[in-house]
Length: 181
Image (cartoon, rainbow, N blue to C red; front, side, top):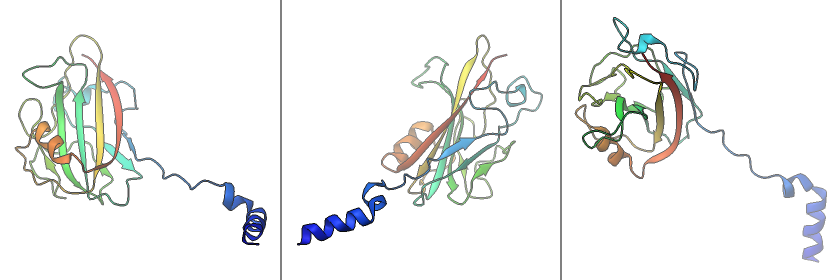
């Protein structure tokens, strides 16, 4: 009797029995400074008289996000002195309520919203302008949504940030551009 009632219920509401739960929309990263996979303009490079950092924005972060981290690096540069590539920008503890970084972020260790800029590949705080010389290099901006804020300061290196993020990444996305002089 119970089996027949369940079968009748499933026949009466077939959409409930066959429709999978909707998947959350994945987190995305975008930029008004250059297209994903496109050529990065000179104004973000050492070729500019006054280079600036590119703009980035993101959407669809998980509800449990407590902060964001952005790592921008040249994945084609050769490893040197224990570094896998050339780090151009490290910014962490971006508040969960923030969904964008404007173009031209100042090289201040702590931003007004509480975000912290760590040490780039030149061991300086802030954005390191691009500078690939010979062939196109691929620059990848990685955005991480974390379930915590990191207890690090502006003297933090990429290794420090990656170690602190371990076990706290709840979503990740990336955006890529190409540049050469």
